Length: 82
Image (tube, one colour):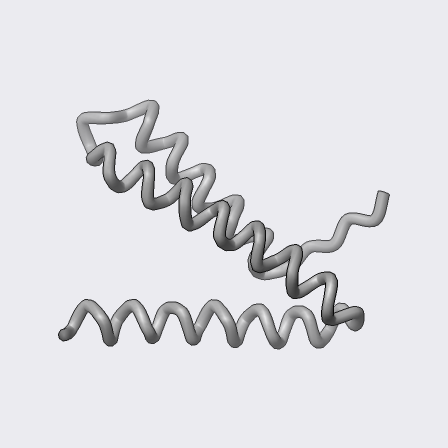
């Protein structure tokens, strides 16, 4: 089994752990936050699979996925300001 650690794998894991935390301690968060974190984890997982399929070099996967995460974060910040 060929396991590769990538930024989107790490981000997916963080999203899943956060969603489980929100489910275990419902007084500190809302149900919508849990659902959105689970959906974000699914989107990150699917995009990680697509990036792995089309980019074969590990160093390029890291660069492209980090750029993807930064682009998505900037886009979210810009949308929230509007």
